[in-house]
Structure formats: C-alpha cells, structure tokens
Length: 75
Image 1 (cartoon, rainbow, N blue to C red):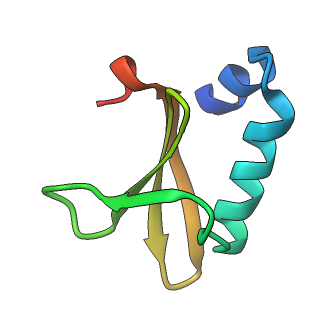
Image 2 (cartoon, rainbow, N blue to C red):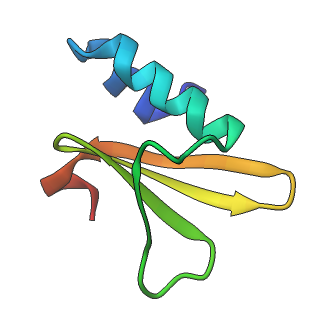
C-alpha cells in the first residue's frame, strides 16, 4: 500500500525539493531545516518547509516519516 504522503509529494509542483527533504530526514542530516519536537510526544518531530510540514519519528534504527501535508491539514 502506498503511503498518503507519497501521493501528496508526487502531485506537488515542488516534488524535487520535497524528495530531497525526505532523503535528508532519512539520513538524519537536518541541520538546514527548522526542526521542532512536537508537544505531547517523546519521539515525534516536525520539519517545516514553506507551508508543508513533515512529521517524523526518531527511532534507534533511524527516522521514519509519519505524515506529510499542508500546515492547516497536518495537526
């Protein structure tokens, strides 16, 4: 089953940028991004790129994307 965020990114005009953000999250190279820990959760973080929010979970094995959506639809 294809994740919803993959469909969202494929339809986006900024597809290349968002694919690079996903790659950086997977590789844990987040120094260029606005990363904040989400309140109420000990493992969830968000990356903000324009009006798009990338929610990911930090695990010992690496980062896992949870959701990607517009600012007003993500929370």
